[in-house]
Every structure is written in structure tokens, then in C-alpha cells.
Image (cartoon, rainbow, N blue to C red; front, side):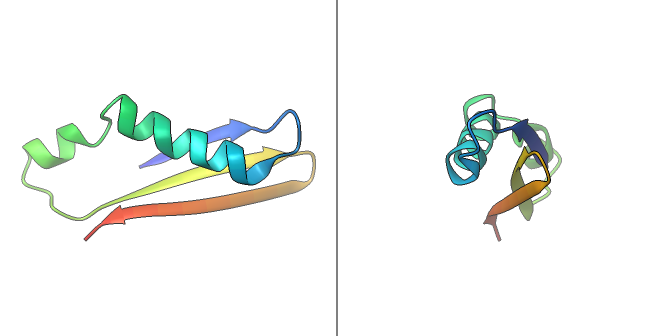
Length: 60
């Protein structure tokens, strides 16, 4: 599961955490769990100009 956001202020870490928080808050993974998929990896991606940061949150 991937959530991508643009970090308007250049604070990539904060925006990655916001993206991961959005995945949790909106329960995007529930459909996978309903289908008995147990391993769901969640990626929060933040971009700013020519930079990018990726954070991973997974339940294995």
C-alpha cells in the first residue's frame, strides 16, 4: 500500500509520517485483512523538489 504526498515545506520525515498516518486513519488495509492477506506493507512517500523520502510500516 502506498501513500504519496508533496512536502511543501521540505520536511520529508514529517510528511512521510503523515502519509503513514493517513493509511492507518482511513483503514486502507482493511480490505486486505478481510481477504485473509496477513502481510501488508505500508509505504509513506514524501517528495520535495528533487528529493524523495520513503518510510515503511509493515505488519508481518
